[in-house]
Length: 239
Image (cartoon, rainbow, N blue to C red; front, top):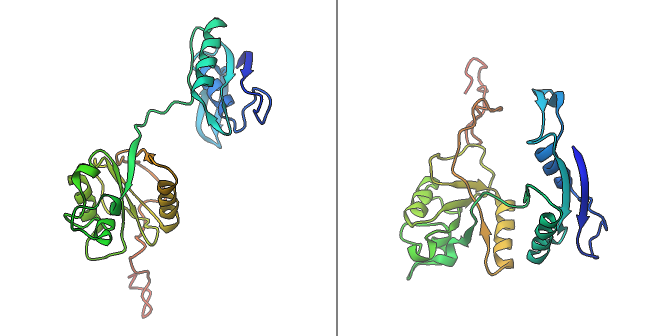
């Protein structure tokens, strides 16, 4: 990679230089214009030749973000400078391709005459469809009277964009698959998500549909709720 120049913005930048603080700048710069490197691999995997999108190009870096975030005015200033400096292509490397959706807890979008406990567990008829539509809904699984799969179907039918299910224990085997985006988290992660919701007026998140990952190891795996073997009477009986 050939660096032609670099700028940074703001006197309060902790680094006081265009150097990044987590390697992201170097990563994106090499992706755009990294030179050809032969016989490379990732710890022995995917051996081959690595190169950036345009190995012969020169990079001009504009550090518009700091540890405190990315401010609109600073980003626009960096773009203006890049244009004035004659940049022929701008890589805006802090953008995301994932859509952000409003994040709500089940008990916060309860239907009329429904208890918070039922809405928190995403019981049938417990959610207000108008408040749920287009959002990611968080449900808990502390009531075994309704299955996890049923919770997912209820949230999906209510018009949500996805579901996060908080489990008392981390589940190592998914309860379902399909096009509707959902995920399971343990109590610790769930607490952190709920804490985030309370910390802001407009909590948001992104969630992607379930995808198949072939040849993943360890897979297959015995579910956490399945009994272990061999049998105590004889090892000839595995379970």
